[in-house]
Amino acid sequence: MADVTAFLAALRDVHPDMARYGLNGGCFRVYLLLKQAFPDAEPWYDSDHVITKIGDRFYDIRGQVEPVSAVGASYMRMCALCFNRAYGWDQQALNTDQGVRHG
Image (tube, rainbow, N blue to C red; front, side, top):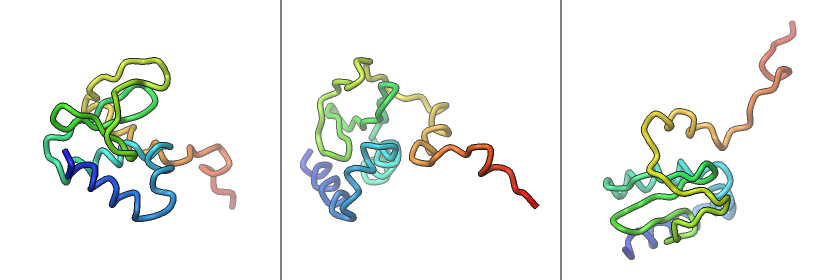
């Protein structure tokens, strides 16, 4: 699908750090953007990274990819119950000092 790869190329051009972000915590948000442009997009997850299935092909911020896991796990279709946690993958976790206000 040339439209998907063109969309991802344009997304990478938005900012020099976009490719790094899409591979380091922002992969679910890349899926969300693809879902807006390509309504049949599905998120697939291997316990480390989300790739997007559109038609019979898989994509991430780099473009079309093979569904081969870098961590040795199988990619599986992500269920909607996992979505809430996925929104915060690119956010740093609060530690005790950040969560408590001293007055």
